[in-house]
Length: 251
Image (cartoon, rainbow, N blue to C red; front, side):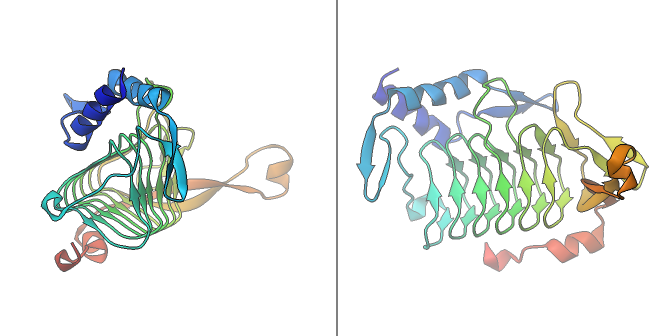
């Protein structure tokens, strides 16, 4: 791949014509070839001075114009080449969106938030301040972080590799989830663990808060030690939606 070919490839990513992952017949599927091409772009790039920064010349920062319909508020945010931001996306400073990420319309990326490489974010998502969506560029066959439409992610959350958050879920302040995290559904008494493809799937409309569970054996149990555990305390209703709704004027 040449640098020009990679630049054309990034144009397709930025236009939303190519995506790292897509929903096919209700299931998210990784486009391995797209991930491989992103990695190839790093390989062919050369280190150059970019103002006070140094990076590969194939992946500079994106620039926006009013015609893009994206609000990139002044104050230190960065959107890397090869990231897609749909019209009406708002990025509050400072925030960062990495290559391969896909952020759909009406989504708010709040201050100090991170949308990692290849993360897929749906419509009307609110990613609150200091929350992170982990990047999953490697291994190329691994599903990136998926946040579906109308999800609310509270402040200081961490959503990492192997996590799919289904539509309308609410992730409370400080919740951390990855594919190794067991989630307890207090409404059913069941545990949600990673499935056969290595993903942890947060159900549609689930309201998840940070909780704990006791160690059940060994010295930890005797000492009364508890381990971190996300807990589904309810499923989204009108009261929940009203408390997290973002006023349209802010978009």
